[in-house]
Image (tube, rainbow, N blue to C red; front, side):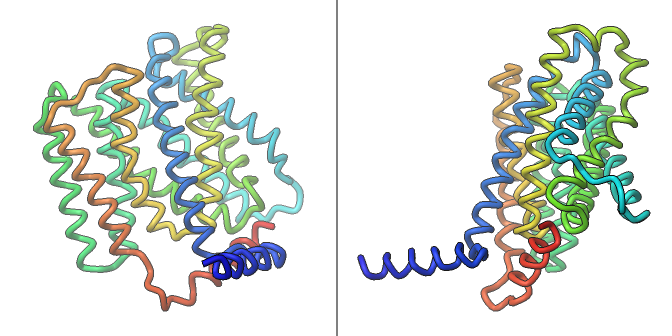
Length: 320
């Protein structure tokens, strides 16, 4: 046992000295990043809901995106010269998806409980994973997720507001777009430079709406302080973690890992916002999470897939 452990550590040390991290290690780390990002995002969303009486949903979105953009620009300092037109186009479209996703989601949680909103929103990434997997068994997991959503609608969430449901579903569609665009930004830009540029575009798009909606309320010190907390928890930190995670795992696996978000959001809603759940809501969320876990297992590449390490190495080289 001792010699086997020594051999393992010797191989691992040699790999790190060569600058090559084993694929399984990178994948495990990426999963931890995705889960950490989910916890941060949903806790931030719960705090954001507490800010709605002060600045409204549009005002909170503006604070979140503007502060996040400033933080990312200061940390990443993205290069502006030498960019191709396609780089700016990607950053612009990515920013549009970020602005739309955040705005629609905050409109949803202003009308329906956080756990319900995220359960509906996660259908976007789950649909992406089913389409990307291209396997018949994936549709079984999609059906299980839909069964969970059906139960959610018939549960005790005080008859979900129709507009809130629509906003959550639309946010889910843009969430799927965000996953695809985040992957492309990770391939094209070094580090989190693409995210910093996209967040700046998103902030510029939301700023007029926030000023018209909230006006002077955005300058209140307490609102600014809590808005900064929301920005760090819900945008700057989790989006950066997502970006780095997508360099080590396929977007389809990332998408279905996000199926854990409804459970995390329901817990955040319970702890921070005191939004209790009934038995049907719990079963609905468990079904959606189980569908995501099943899709991850179904879509996991087999041991004989040689393209994965090459793809990971190519992404790492592009970013450096």
